[in-house]
Image (tube, rainbow, N blue to C red):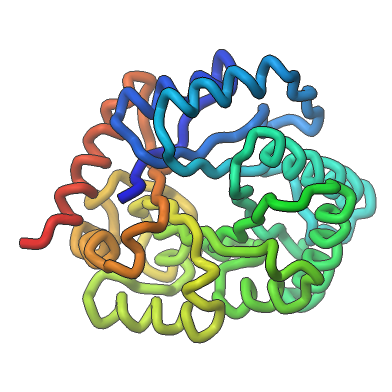
Length: 283
């Protein structure tokens, strides 16, 4: 079972491994740079070597990177699109240089032009970014979203629509966020609703495209379209929902990371990971 958390890269990319080790994590998500800025500092050979050595010391465990929240490949604004393509291409180059398999990304916002127009723009601009990146192996994971405002990706149909329109479907997968999907109207709290949700995902997207999970409870009620993360079992999804997921053998080998609130001592991560490990045990 690959289970861990998103960790800070303060002090250097390699420091994320020290932090994930502190919580005994076996899966990791990071930003590869300051995600609040457009400017991307170059990766040096020394940065890459430090990262590689620290990863080897941690173990043969999976890592995903998350791209900058500034990027919006579905935008109708030319300057924002140009910046987003350049930045996304660089994100792909960075993860390939670091030997990270997956880049998690939110599918952008249509800014009032409608879902269909947004999906068309997103897929076209995503293809351009892939081509400009010059990368060959980096896999892009479209993250499920809560459906706030004009954000894309809150329905399985929207994710499938992006994949179908891309010239590079073999480079695309999905990261399933439990908070976001619950807020978007996909229930996992009972065995019946859990089965129905993933049957729909399999029918519309395909379980073979599900490569990564974000495990977050939610502060808001079902179908709220609000994205506010909560500790495992302390929100509206509750322990039963996470038990359904953690005991689903189809999902056992898929890496899962927390994005729940935490302080610098990381004890919240320790507690949440312990809860998830207990839920994975058959009783």
